[in-house]
Length: 187
Image (tube, rainbow, N blue to C red; front, top):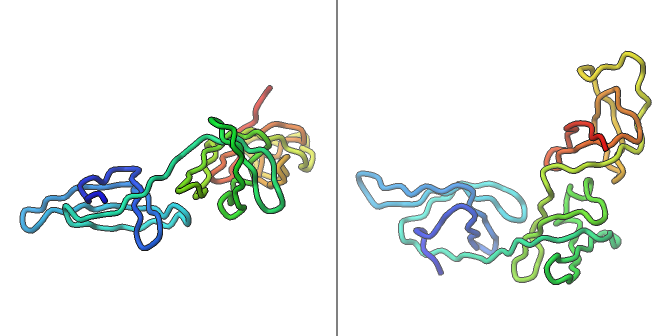
């Protein structure tokens, strides 16, 4: 057990059977009354954000979440198999935990997985990845980079919007958080 005075960014608190990660915290000592700690917390599994206040010195239960580097190996039905980069153990992660990251993962992709008691809680991708466009309508003479956009299918099967001048076979940089096109990549 820890106290509310030990709260800092990144602390994972176990409350009502759920894990909450502290995003922001502020120790407040008003002129009148007792001190307290104001926090903004994010649910580790669902991503929901809440504001929570603790009295100074209140007992809280912290959880140990281990973030480790993994390499994506392959998809096994609805699940994904990853290899730990330190001890080469393989773990299977459900598609619920992987979520939208599956749209941007290629085999041998490096990711970080948060584990609590050996159970995968969440998966973090790099901020951007380089993927090849496998299909898009051909560009036309006069299409400009400042013009509109068109749909393009990536090598992972995901569909994003790209500028009109891009053609199939082009490598593009994609933001893994939003799925936005960031630019063309020259080899």
